[in-house]
Amino acid sequence: MDRITIIVPCYNEAEVVGRFYETVEAATAGIADAAFTYLFIDDGSRDNTLAAIRTLAEAHTNVRYISFTRNFGKEPAMMAGLDYADGDAVILMDADLQHPPALIPEMVALWRAGYDDVCGKRTDRTDETFLKRTMANLFYRSMQAVSRFTLQRDVGDFRLLDHRCVAALRLLRENQRFTKGLFTWVGFKKKEIPFHVQPRAAGTTTWSYPALLSLAIEGITSFTTAPLRLTTVLGLIVSALAIGYMLVVLVDALLYGDPVAGYPTLMTVLLFLGGVQLLSLGIIGEYLGRVFTESKQRPTYLIDERDGEKFDYSKLRREVKRCRETGE
Image (cartoon, rainbow, N blue to C red):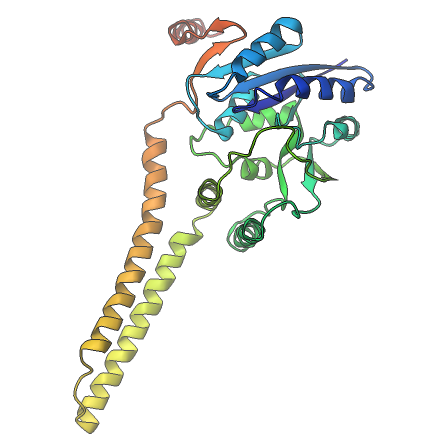
């Protein structure tokens, strides 16, 4: 009997939690020799999501849940799901039913055939705005150009992971996470399944353009130092141009006695150099900010409630201390 945990990050999904459970249960009912457990992660929702999950857990023994102390974001929510999931494999899904549950039987079949990471691949982006599609294309092309590994294009969080993949991902404890890149970075045998993103069952998306831009910057700074190298190249180019321009002005003044260029030229050069310097400082600042955040070693998330009980970190610390002392 294969034990599979379905991890469901939730933020303000009170309207769809019950429908999600019923839909997935119907989709997985025909899978032989498999027991499914649901692990809902309430990411500090402001509506009645937690109450809906509690009701579901009281009614069904295969439903578990974790509730955060506040909204930490989807990336920490997925990390918590991976930390507390058990069994032979996990499936990551959104609660809004945009990830079609009908693909789960095919995912399980491919996993049983030997694949460690079976992931859904979007077939189109016609439901997105032109600006969003352009930003996505630019991001993937940028990552392809500067990264040392190939990021899976149009592949998101909807996937089945073998327990070996889960164990590997648990080793990666950085606070500023770009999980889509981590899925690729850990490797393992992958298989993509094409799917069309379904309309949201209820509610509205929380992914704004600034949030998507922030995620893109997170992805680039997490997996490549190319922007830092870009500042070096820019510095060399600007220095070469400055030396060349200086020689032109000097030769012009010595041979022809022309006066040195005045205020307009000076301001143009100063503004150009100032722009390059600010860009370079901004890029360096992004990386220094990451170092600063990681150096504090704060936990990626904090749990308020787990399966009906308030989470007590003092007990956890005592248990960790006891295990270290006894060598367990």
